[in-house]
Length: 402
Image (cartoon, rainbow, N blue to C red; front, side, top):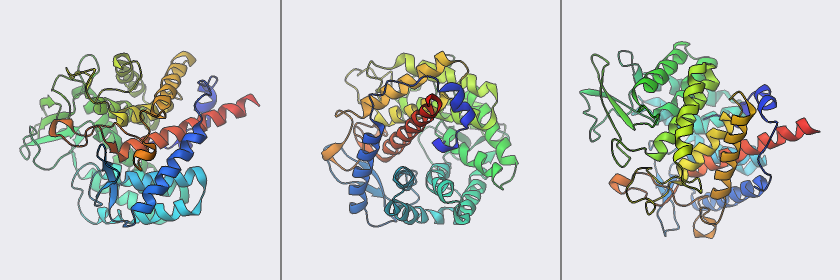
């Protein structure tokens, strides 16, 4: 998960000649996030139980243990709160909740999500504190993630367990979410880890690019490979409407993931692909820019929305706007990102007094009825990340104009 302060100043100077209209008060929205997070912090006192979601019309967080794939997002939010405010209380809370995830590196990774779990928590922690404890946790986590790589296939295994349609253990499966977890491998290769971690991440991205997209650049959720030969067996969409539909969050992961891979590699193939998967998403969005949970659900326009996908894409677009050549495309991506954040910051999507989350109307796993039209922790994480990225872009623009 790209952090706003890691962007090179050169990219910002090149592409930030224009900014979107200043009618989104970023500081106001960030302070709203801190106020909501403070209410959650008062409620969630056990650092071994992380907030995950709040069902529609409920007020209290459903909490999960450190092995849940979403466990790193709450510590990450706390680190972002500290990053924005520099307040000691946020740092202390972030350290406490991050430490609860350290046991993840004491056993083999149970799936690819160790990247989400550790990079959002210990990754933000190391960036802000430079403490060696966090660095070592990240390096060990990267090694655990790398153990899931199948060199014959060319990707990391996502689900080493029984999931409908993936034919485990006879087949090797890779899901689109895994693109985000590659950032842990890239980071480790630059910070004392084995150099092959970089090559592994690049190969995973290339293999996914080849096998996990349709000709129109919409994505499948899952590709199943023959474990022995590495050949593609089938592509399915486990959490979307159908195998031929565009599941919103899956496409969001692709947009975010390939933007990050280009930033790490500077390989123009990845920049071109990031734009292709972005542009098809933008073309299919409804007028308010918040996607339905699946673009092809026949219930549209009465289908549930997914604010989490909107938050992920808004954050990704702000970074992508600093990477694309040509101001016209950069300005388009920035404008779309800001418009998405404006919509998410309006009363329709903000939780406000309804509960302690930042946002409402996210969709987790609709086919199995899980977390539909709910508040979900990763929506909040990418929302605050996007706001921080926009704040940094605007500050850098002000430096240019002075």
